[in-house]
Amino acid sequence: MNISEKLKIYADVLENEPMSKHTTYRIGGNVRYYIYPKNLLSLMRIIRILKDNKIRYEVMGRGSNVLWGDNYFDGAVINLDRYLNDSYVEPDGTIVAQAGCSTINLAVEAGKNGLTGLEFATGIPGSIGGGVYMNAGAYKSDFSNILESVLVFMDDQIIWMQKDELMFGYRKSSFQSHPEWIILAAKFKCKPGNKEEILSLMDSRRERRLASQPLDKPCAGSVFRNPESIPAWKLVDDLGLRGHQIGGAQVSEKHSNFIVNAGNAKAQDVRDLIALIQKAAKESYGIDLITEVEHFNCE
Image (cartoon, rainbow, N blue to C red; front, side, top):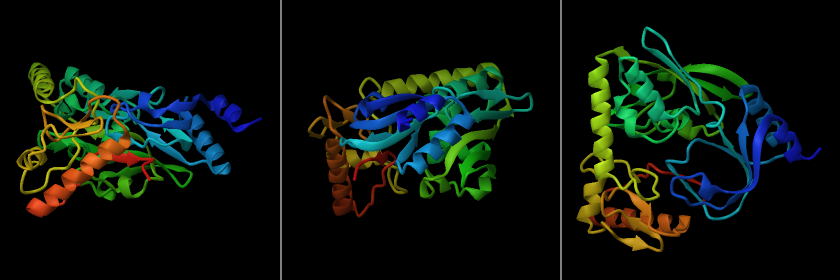
């Protein structure tokens, strides 16, 4: 039995799959295996098969904060969204969600149950795993504000890790320095609130995002973390780079902390445009711009 046949016992497997189909940038070269594990046991077995055969792998969610390189990746991408996406809301405000659960769907579900705390996530188009990994946030709130613990697969064990063990900060967590750890689920604690007010706030914020962000074009959300002294979008504007384009990658005319795929962009176009902005920010203002977007297969 070959590797593909073994993997297909435990998962839906796509071979020689274009990553451009699985990132919101619509950018990315082909990967050897694109894998949807059917359950937690399947995931553990898949990882063992890949390790035994010395096959590199990455774990991804909805591809909304990802720039995937143009070259062929002779490895595997494991996606948890298709099957490991359940969530549970308890009467006391405890919410438990698997890593593949949609962030937006979970926020709406919390609101429908009259729970406040996840309103900031209404417009974040990723999965819970990715949100925890990046400590995603908006409107001066983030996942760590309501997070209690994270279920993690590490060293062939599954353990709950408490929030204070994971060094959360602005758009960062311990997971970024431990890519071998796999987020399986998270537990949050929300507070009771007025259901109508919560849902109304979510609706208004959703409309605000639609009005202010270039969500009609392939992109990966905000490109840069905000420096302490100035919002990233304003810095890009002050540099005169709104609308600037390299190849098919363009600084959005609508929101200059977004780089959009204006048509047939390559990952290298995006990387070159990011590098140009970072160099200009450093030379003109002495500011080191740090990216929010995660780079994969971009060696």
